[in-house]
Amino acid sequence: MKILFLGSSHFSKIVLEKMLEKDLNVCAIITQPDKPSGRGHKLLPTEVKSYGQEKNIPVFTFDRIKLHLDEIKNIDYDLAVVASFGQILPKDFLDYKLTINVHPSLLPKYRGPSPIQSALLNGDKITGVTIMKVACEVDAGDIILQKEFAINDEYYGELEEKLALLGGEMVKESVCAIENGTVKFTPQDSSFATFTTKFTKEDGRLDFTKSAPEIVNRVRALSEEVGCYITLSDQFIKVGKAIDVTGKFETKMSTILNYKKNFIIGCKDSAVEILYAQAPSGKMISGRDFINGHNDVLGKNVL
Image (cartoon, rainbow, N blue to C red; front, top):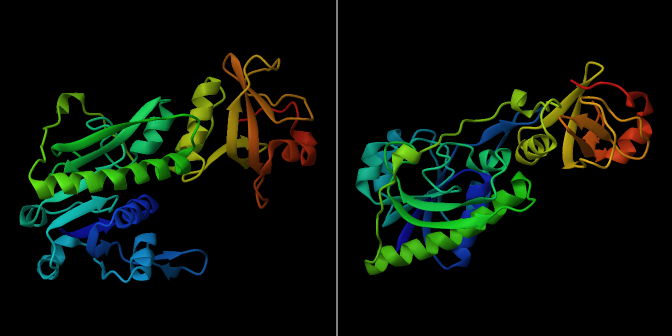
């Protein structure tokens, strides 16, 4: 079965890698156009484009799929597989050939653009991957295959990679079912649907009137992509990693403990240790090194 792959993100690239490892026949790739990056605004390709070219797979960069339907119909493929592509697919495309999607949540939970971050932010212990038939309504298509995955102490990047690898394996299983005619399409119960949105910089602000688990979950979910931070003396201090140290220190809410060995901040009925922090114009360093170089912050309040 010849597969047309549509994807643009790091998640997409890992799914694609696993699909090729499983000997699936990816005959062509569609990804987002190159985008400007960095101070020089140099145009950079998506990871999927670079990887596809490395593997000598034809790659097309279409900014709006509906404007390129004739070109797509000239591609000799049997099935389209979508993973974090970044565009709404038009009905004409979906009606042309069967299209399935790799979505990193247990649908109908966490429809939308940020299912992995949302699972971490909410402190979920179980997430998973769903393979579904793509429908016009976002993430509302019939379920083909669904598998659970236990969340431990992963941060976003690690969990994204694990779910993408699982997703690539599930694509193989789904393609086999489609080929041999045993595939089943199970409608979602939309009454149980929950929805996610894109996170912004403001979502990364750490509020120490919250509990330690809530703060740590926010760091795990958002520090790597969106960025997490505290405000201290009108400066933004980035937070890379944090752990719950409730019961180990006597702390006051929203106050940095006057303790030179660790970067401890009091929160609601608990305490958090900042394991990695970054001052403006500095590098991300350990919390202990940060405190050693910034003793003046001890005892101060954070916002």
